[in-house]
Length: 98
Image (tube, rainbow, N blue to C red):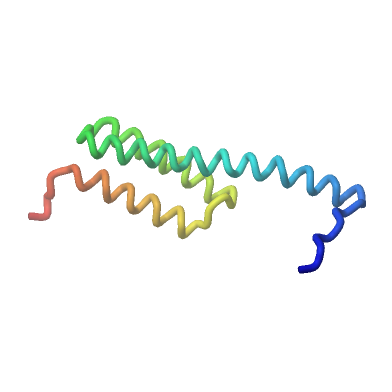
């Protein structure tokens, strides 16, 4: 295999590399927050706690929508996650369609 290319030397390339490190850390932090909030909803549903599940769902939906607006996750991915979590919380409620 060929050796790895030498890092760029121009000022702009050095700055972009420096920015990329910071942005990667920020994005990773935001994605971990989304996972944590989603787990809170799942935990509240597992404990059958409707109040906590509802508030946790509101928090995670807000965070997911914000992440989609910022381009952190794709809008369809955001919609899928919101849909699945909402369906999970609604499964705790008694069915009115019966």
